[in-house]
Length: 206
Image 1: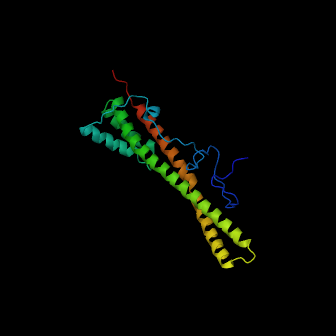
Image 2: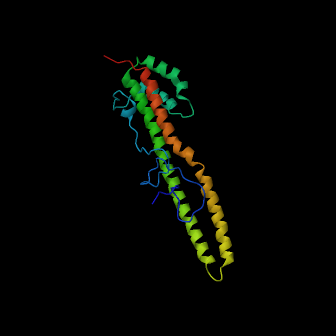
Image 3: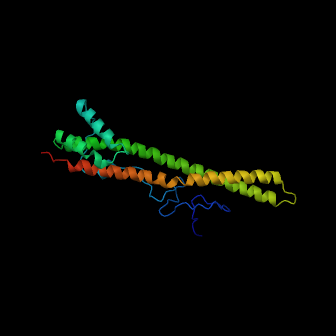
């Protein structure tokens, strides 16, 4: 039996919005996105140099926090921060340990944000599943009422109105899924771009 073209499709539903399925993970109904679900990112996959485990202290810690904070601002293009990165790297002789600390700081901030967004996608998905089940239950009740010899038309009218509103809400919510699903990948791309930018200024020590 072929898979449904809508993740939340239930028998008899005619909402008319197909959920994107290419690449979707059917084993996880809380992940409705085309993009492959990657729950955890790794510093080591993006940054080619060892990163010190201990936290920097004093003025260096402040500088790292400041640059890492700037790199974490998604509203600022990574390339716009090149002069700031270049100056920082020059001040620290391109030390890979120091630049690695900057990347780790940036990674921690953006990865935490990405995790929260993925949790929001799961919550969104679950709410849509619940709403689709509610729509299906309403349809079944309407069908049962209309099958009677003496239907309760007032009740049918109330259910029909409820069904209309639920379908409007479902449809409106669906329109936001493309943006929601793209956001984790945008964060991943930013992290890779930041790693590449910082690596340009690394000077091998020793």
